[in-house]
Picture 1 (cartoon, rainbow, N blue to C red):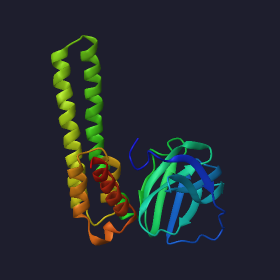
Picture 2 (tube, helix red, strand yellow):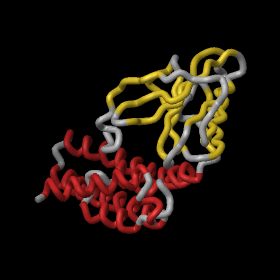
Picture 3 (tube, rainbow, N blue to C red):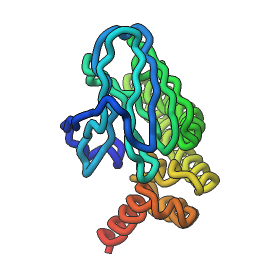
Length: 232
């Protein structure tokens, strides 16, 4: 479980939702195939998953939810009938559009309107390639263990270690190149939380003044200070 989400208590606090949407972030969406249900807009607050808005669907699957965003952060769209599946997106001020399907609620989601979301998807597209290679190595290691091929297993373990390093370096470089986006500290917290402290410092030191003051910028700085304090 990633550092940022590891301490989340799976509790949902439902806030009363007015028919008149208020807030500087408006999320317009359509869930194809959904005729009836309740859509929730959620985020993590003080390690708890809370619902900040909701709307009942009765007909065409269209919905509008909103929130007041002080600093861009990750939000979730969930459906009462599919609590285990959530559409994850980077929320920020403005209008965001989400289109998905009931049968592939999370994986079929198309999101637009958020610059941080675009950066996150750009990073994740490459990260998936690393993940795919890791899965291949896992299968190869399993086969090597079955036939007790210690030489091959040692080779595969070395390849896996190098692959993880390459993945860390890719994320670090991506964050540094996009240091003026809140995506940068978010990636450091979720992808580099157990990497060498030097990589976290590299990302933190590259952040612009604005991003340092953002939600994830402050969390990253606090996390680094906590690590260094524990080391001492």
